[in-house]
Amino acid sequence: MKTAFFSFLLLALTACSGGQSQETDKTAADNETSPSANGAKVCRIDLLPYGDFTAQETERLKRELKQNLTQIVPVDIKILPAEPLPHSAYYKPRNRYRAGEILNVLKRRKKPGEGVTIGLTHKDISTTIHGTQDFGIMGYSHLPGNAAVCSTFRLKRRADLCNLVIHEFLHAVGFPHCETAGCYMQDAHGKNVMTGSKSLCRQCQPRIKQMKY
Ligand SMILES: [Zn+2]
Ligand SMILES: [Zn+2]
Image (cartoon, rainbow, N blue to C red):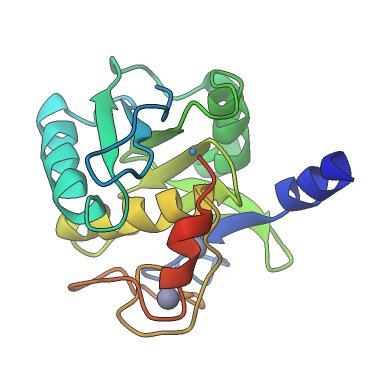
């Protein structure tokens, strides 16, 4: 029973698109064992900067994530040494990287219960979705899963990266999309909804207690 349920969940992928239309593309999870002061489990997040994503940018993101995520879940954020994007994910015809393959590489590095690794890149990433073989996206994660990848390529403002990363992280720990404007989990429906101040809506808040990490 358990196995069947888990397999079903792994089939649910999320590709978060947005930003400007380009070409035919319309737009586009350490152990968490130590308890926090209020008794909730601490979620380990590993940030992995790819290529020219700088140490300064990663440090800034870490501070923003800590500030915003601690209101939802206690987190322990680590920065991994930078590395190149996986060569196996490169899609030459469009000079992009396949998000699914990046996740395949990342998820092999963690065992269940070891938190979420989030890859960070300035390169364009894509997946097969909406009947399009290679569709440009901003973020990609499993629902739930132990990894996510986020790209700034389609973000209108660099300042929106924190919202995007929180969105993908929350997918990875079990949050589906919602339709509430201003919620971290709002379904973009092909538009860029990452801008501005965000919070978790009333519909999404009960899921905090069911987070998987
Ligand atoms: Zn999403
Ligand atoms: Zn919501």
